[in-house]
Amino acid sequence: MSPVYTSKDLGAAIRAERKRQKLTQTEVANLCAVSLSFISNLENGKETAELEKALKVLSTLGLDITITKRGE
Image 1 (cartoon, one colour):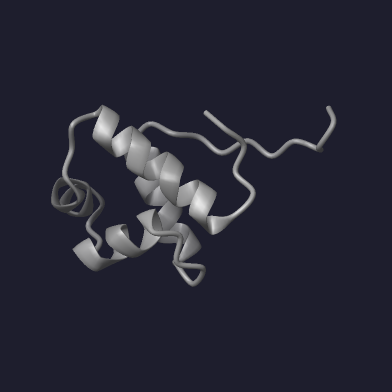
Image 2 (cartoon, one colour):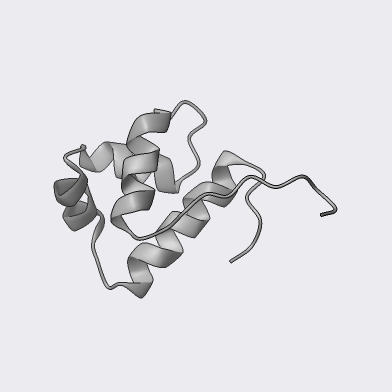
């Protein structure tokens, strides 16, 4: 996966993994107990997405976030 620098990058990574797992947005929303509109907004890179919910979606899809200093 590519580095994530923006909300659009994060959304693209989430969308790619969801599609790789052959899940619909509705299925992911149900698994995470969030609304379909939240998943849609998150995948479209809406900057005001709630962080805790976004982390839950990442976890549900088996994705982790690692923070590293650039250049290391």
